[in-house]
Image 1 (cartoon, rainbow, N blue to C red):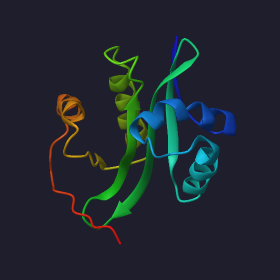
Image 2 (image 1 turned 30 degrees about the vertical axis):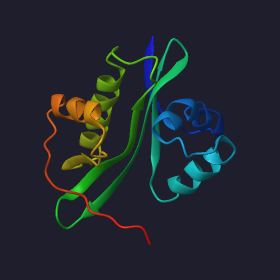
Image 3 (image 1 turned 45 degrees about the horizontal axis):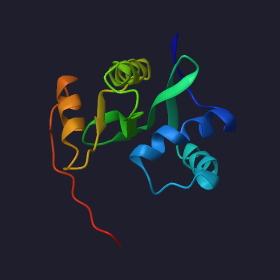
Length: 140
């Protein structure tokens, strides 16, 4: 049985840690719930896919508006457990995010992906995403 839902309780948020830390290894488990709760005050949401009562995929996202694109669902984090890949969990969670965006009147769905993440890029292109810009940043 597969289910996708938003993490609302501290227990559900903490249940996402083992998977999301594979993408964000700098995170500390003892501070994870507090960090997610803080980001939730700014609109962050955490969705997770469970298969056989185990969290196997996680997506962190937010909805915002901008002049360039209108209302956007932006994916901050998207990861499938390394031991549960190639079972379409990522695709199922991605499709759920698309439907969530449509149901919330978003005009775009977007994300940034590190230039070294070639497997992720193949996945995004297979999901019919386009490479539409370069992302520039600097540490302050």
